[in-house]
Structure formats: C-alpha cells, structure tokens
Amino acid sequence: MSQPSEQTQHSATICNIAPASDPATLQVAVKILTAGGLVAIPTETVYGLGAAINNKNAVSQIFAVKGRPQDHPLIVHIAELKQLQDVAVNISDDALKLAGSCWPGPLTILLQRSNQVSNDITGGRETVAVRLPDNVFTRQLITLLGSPIAAPSANRFGKVSPTTAQHVCDDLQSDVDLIVDDGACSIGVESTIVDFSVSPPQLLRPGGILVEDIEQILGYQIKRSDGISRASGMLQSHYRPTCQVRLVETEAEASRLLKTLEPQLMPARILNRCENLPLYASLLYNDLRQADTDQIRTLIAVLPVNTGLGAAITDRLSKAAAPLQGLPAS
Ligand code: AMP
Ligand code: MG
Image (cartoon, rainbow, N blue to C red):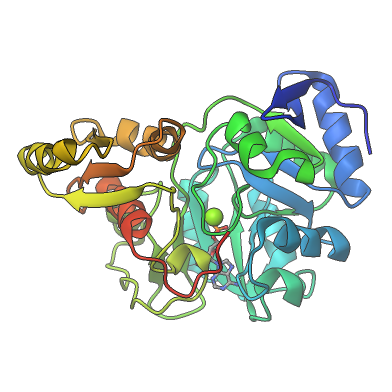
C-alpha cells in the first residue's frame, strides 16, 4: 500500500515499522488511513490498532485482524478537546471538567454518541468511548487525517496488550499496514474508563488515571464497576499470556510457592515490582510477554495494594490469571 520507511525481519515475518521521529512517517500514515488501511499508533497507555472512524471497511478490518467480537466497542481517539462535540452529544459539565483536567492523558469517557460515530464502532450502542491521548505523533496524525481514529489495543483478542512497536509486530505481523514506533509506552496499562452516560458517573475500568484523582477533580465519589461485562477490557479473562499466572499477596508467599514448583522442574518466576507501581505498570505487559519468551510455565505475581495505580495493575493481573471463560482461542 505504501513504501515502508524501514522493514523489520522477525520470526520470518516482515513488519512495516516506521519511526515517529521521521517526518515522512506522518505523511505515510495519513495516506494509509485515508486509503482505508490500518496503522498501529503509539499512545502513552498501549499501542493502538487504528482506523479512520469514517471508513467502514477499515473499522471492520480492525475486528477481523484482532479476532475481536463485533459487539466489543472501540475507543475513539481525538486530537483536541473541541473535537469532542463532533463525536458525542449531551456532554455534561462534569464530563467536560474531567476531560479538561485529564486530557491529554489516560482517561476515556463514555458519552452519548453523535451521528458521526457508526454502530460498527460502538457495537450497536448509543454510547461512544472517547479519549485524547498524550502522544504528539498520534495527535498530529488525527489532525492531519481530519478524522478521529478508532483504535483498540494492537494485539489479538484476549492476549497481552502491546507496549512497544516490536510487540505489535510479534502479534500482528503484516496484518497491519504500518507500525509507528515511538518507543515504549510510558504508562503501560490501558486508560481509566468513566461512564458519563449514567448518573452518577461510573468507573468501568481502572487505568492510568487514578480514581482517587478523578474523585478529587469532580468533588464526589463515582460509582465503582458493577461487574457486568460490557466489553472486552471488562471480561474476567483477558490480557492472557500462555504461561499460568498465579497471584499471591507477599514476596514470602511467592518464594514459598516457587520452592514447591522447582522440584517438579516447572520453570517458574516471581514478578514483584510493588516497590515502584509506575514501573510495575509500565513493564507489566513486557514482563508477561517475556515470561512466555523464556518458556516460563508459572509466573508468580505479587499483587500491589488495590488502590491508586495498584488498582489497574491488580485488575490486569487478575484477568491474566483468570481461567478462560467464553473466550475464543486466539
Ligand atoms: P480496549 O479493548 O482496551 O480498546 O477497551 C475498550 C473498552 O472501552 C472496553 O473495555 C469498554 O469498556 C469500553 N467501551 C468502548 N466503547 C464503549 C461503548 N460504546 N459503550 C461501553 N463501553 C465502551
Ligand atoms: Mg485490548
């Protein structure tokens, strides 16, 4: 579809990876999206698999490439706050206030959709999830394209999210037309999702913006998730590596479990970055992937406190450890 700026050979597969720092990459990415292709875009949370929202074929290609069920809606990414009114209607003052304080950043808000957002993107829902990411390249891309970009994480459905361009290449190979490499994602876990289509607003997924900070900005407590699975990031089993993930509360417990596994010659490893939660989050998906690369059978993960960023890490680790339930093998 386009001339690759650089090609990376990996596992006998050619990926079209281009550095975000190369000015030509922006033009190439716009061309691909305009022609209905898919571009893996960098964000501060995870890499996204992007399509122009007004291109029906490209949007349906996202679902095909990911193996994602059609009823799992996509997040719509915008480049500036004023674009919010293009994709959403009946935006409450509180939603605007929160977006104004947290954007650009790892916050997604759920609002009533405008008629610019199709059923294919929202899985037939009347709501749209919107985010303004903190990545200069991706915002420039949206602006130059002249359209918001719909993007879920750039991995196969149910698997571990990508936080580097190489992760995307490992997962999607040439199923994505271009991968824009802007280094490792700084936050490393997905956005916090707050549903403003209900009153009071409700937390749908803990993530990069702390719930405590959201409540401080709004000046009241938001409703916590009621456990009803409304989309992929809320399924019980998700973000799964191939190895088994076992959750423990303390390092001592992890060591005891490791000792019971070693005599059985089951390669096992402890994951514990509780001392530094931003680092735990930013390296989490890389750590899960590395365990598979190293053919670890059991990854023993020490759970952080279930508040602040620890809530997002606990959520992802719990889903990585959950037994497969109603998920297609992917
Ligand atoms: P991801 O797979 O990380 O892109 O996650 C997308 C998440 O956005 C899902 O887990 C949903 O919770 C949420 N979401 C996106 N769009 C909608 C929508 N229209 N209605 C409800 N939830 C949505
Ligand atoms: Mg995902």
